[in-house]
Image 1 (cartoon, rainbow, N blue to C red):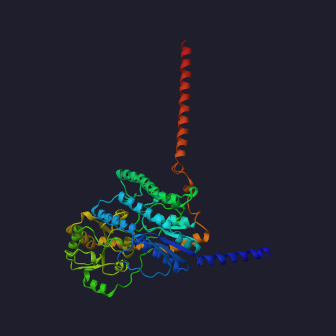
Image 2 (image 1 turned 90 degrees about the vertical axis):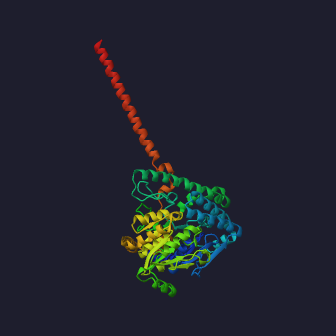
Image 3 (image 1 turned 180 degrees about the vertical axis):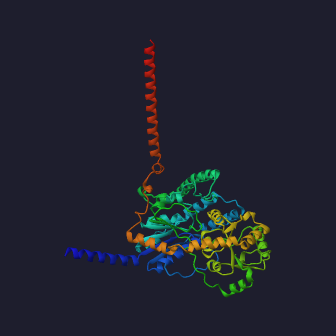
Length: 525
């Protein structure tokens, strides 16, 4: 009797478990705009399409996507808007930062300033008790958060829910996540190095590795005030602790572009999540492209958050370069911000927003001119399109170093752009077929992955839901102090033992020498 009851109980538990899995309530959190939001929107739709109950919590205000028309979503959205004073200050800061990007004057100061603004925004977010009360009543099972804005971690912690982190950038936060990153062959951010380094480059990379530790500590200290203001004294989490508490980490990278490096069991690459087979473009675009004949066309876009170029001299040089090439040019640029005294090149079409993925998959596509954001590069690789990069900030310079190392494109710094130099680079990348060949090779690598990125994201999150957490995937190193991880205690022990042995050997030898000398003297006497 007992033997027959056990299988029935097991079957019943399995049925209940599968029912919970199919209808898991998931909260996605996105507190940044631009490509960060677009990435999280795609992720949310994947779970909706596979039977899960999804709600997004997103902030509206800074970092929105100019030119992009918001469409209705198949999932409900809880939003809040930042106050006008903060938004004006943020817009002023971002406008100044854009000018610094294009003139090459941006640095770590700009990054820390941005983190200060995000920490201030986080204080306002955490004060919205009405929203937190509502989200708590919804009884979500798990949170999937966009990890660029550290505030998303504090939101998940405040809700007391397990969470999964999606990072739309590369492995720039490897240290806080605990990823093994040997400086001998893993280039640090923002070193501009490849995985093949000579001696001096490895020296530079080692110092960059140490600098990463300092950067992480500064950002952690910036957000410590959020922890102090919104968590009890005996349970105030640090940003490092929150990073390492994530059940899973997903990165928007793929080894068709990324250099091979060690990962951990709970870290996965889902680069190309937004890349899809191309759909037909609109008729007016098709007519414009048809005018190019065999020359084809070029797409120009400098990111979802930058709709214009604030430096007129750079804009003039780029426009002049486009006028000298035979291709048609589709340029994502807000027409209302085009200078009145600058005549647009006759082969250029300005658009407030472009469906980049569909254009990249068009048979007459010849070149993508891009800032080097990962979403754009993943789509270019997916469709086998060569790249000419204009890196502006963040991980973009390092991303384009990898594109060049893979032989599928080149890059030019924005403050070095002249009409002749820019036009020459366009001609070179389009006419030298080796770039197209390399791009197609990387496309085959990406497309032939055994598990597409959407399946990885869905499968691993469902695994966490099914197994009740990802503790079995996280390394014990998360619980070790730094000196144990670096084996400094072991090295000190071995050094002490060796030193003690050497000391004893020296003492014995000196004793034997002294003994022999005494015997020799006795014989002489």
